[in-house]
Length: 180
Image 1 (cartoon, rainbow, N blue to C red):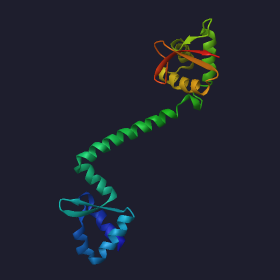
Image 2 (tube, rainbow, N blue to C red; image 1 turned 30 degrees about the vertical axis):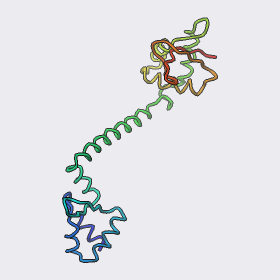
Image 3 (cartoon, rainbow, N blue to C red; image 1 turned 60 degrees about the horizontal axis):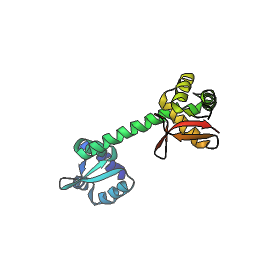
């Protein structure tokens, strides 16, 4: 009986079918079958006006996306979020950590050595210009690699506040770096 009721509900499409109509068609045995289908997440029962209607999950989503303005807004936001997450996943597969920028740290360290003053400090902007040119990467990629490099190797690098560009640490712009 469950499959017959489910077939009838699916057949009703986006409009759904009145619960009372199902009771007329299948008799009093309809209620336990509907409860089982509800428990198994095969159907959804909701009010449409004063009557209770039954939909399949897919048809119910179509119904509320056509008729509920709040759902439309939330659905649009969710799609945008999903697209953003997929873009981030796609971008993360292109990260240098997976071999697209071989040996970033050695380029970074060599540039610090070559550009450092007598005290060892080098503006991040100068390092970025040279490393971005050498590795053919963007400014965003450079800083997305530098921050974890500095954080994971605090005994090798010291950073200082100031400058026009750099990395944000504890809410402050650090524009200078030196090797220890």
